[in-house]
Amino acid sequence: MKVGIVGATGYTGVQLVQILSRHENAEISFVTSQSYAGRQLAEVYPHLAGLDLVLTEYSPALLQRCDCLFIALPHGLSGPVVADAREQGVKVIDLGADFRLDDAGTYQQWYGSEHSHPQWLRQGVYGLPEINRAKIGNAQLVANPGCYPTTVLLALAPLADKGLVNPGSIIIDAKSGVSGAGRKVSLTTHYSEVNDSITAYGVASHRHTPEIEQELGKFFNAEVKVSFTPHLVPMTRGMLSTIYASLSKTVNEDELRAIYQDYYQGEPFVQLLSPGQWPKTKYCYGSNRCFLNLTVDQRTGRLILVSCIDNLVKGASGQAVQNFNILAGLPEDTGLAGMGMMP
Ligand SMILES: NC(=O)C1=CN([C@@H]2O[C@H](COP(=O)(O)OP(=O)(O)OC[C@H]3O[C@@H](n4cnc5c(N)ncnc54)[C@H](OP(=O)(O)O)[C@@H]3O)[C@@H](O)[C@H]2O)C=CC1
Ligand SMILES: CC(=O)N[C@@H](CCC(=O)OP(=O)(O)O)C(=O)O
Image (cartoon, rainbow, N blue to C red; front, side):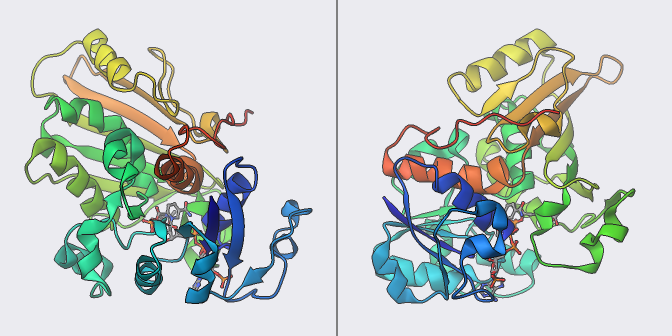
């Protein structure tokens, strides 16, 4: 399949190029950039030396050259590109947040502006393959999930599916590496602000909250409210969420582990670790895997889940390629079989 990448110079865009340039069933037809149009991508990112891809400014005419389009633009910018692609019958995988929420009012409340193409909101299929595989296969527009929601939903899905957690009890304490904020320079992400330090941000206001609530709500068939606090930590890649919740009935740890083994049986990218072995972001550095573990605190009876991913791979570009594989009818791990990097 011929693919195009809009926003190829960003961190998720360049990660897409890295994965797709080695993908046996994808051919990159074009890569776009506003700031670097006319330059070789390998000039902007010398680690791609040897790859002959010239950056071009986006125009709708480019879409004739692809079967599937990846959009890796900052949120708020995907609408017109999605409209062009839909007009020309090109399938879209949007890595940004613009088509993840079902409701235009919720979008406006959390993103601070009116949605440019509300008519497309309900047609975007939420692209978390382990949960939504059947719908993704027929989608014209896949809304690739946010990185924090990916860690949280993969951790909670097996229990939410069985109604075993109390939906009002969920507290999420999450940490992200700085690449989660993208390549652009900002005061909050420059070296001397971030290094040797850790901070919470978006407290009680982060825009991934409604995304998590929306997708969890589908399991419970009811409105769900979660407490979600993200933190920025001084590392480049990686994301780890620790989730606390109360169980809706007494289930012992062995039974819980059996539920996870069953739910994720045959899933190449989700792995429950052995008892007492806790997820570490390095286990998934550069890979499309999510590592999970859980316990029940015997003193409080509370469930504790820990989940980690590489924010740029399972949290963005790897998951986007997993969705592409589903759309293309390919084995889901095509081009994604790599392991993480340790140490
Ligand atoms: N970073 C992460 O871990 C994750 C990111 N995402 C989402 O993926 C999307 C891309 O993120 P990321 O790669 O980190 O972002 P970056 O800031 O690293 O890259 C953004 C890209 O968009 C282009 N761009 C910026 N502004 C404009 C504009 N006004 N018009 C056209 N092109 C523009 C840039 O191109 P240029 O400057 O060359 O013109 C660049 O290629 C975002 O929606 C983000 O929220 C999702 C999950 C995880
Ligand atoms: C560290 C950091 O700043 N992370 C980003 C999340 C990246 C992401 O998943 O963003 P989208 O929802 O736009 O895809 C943030 O908190 O906004």
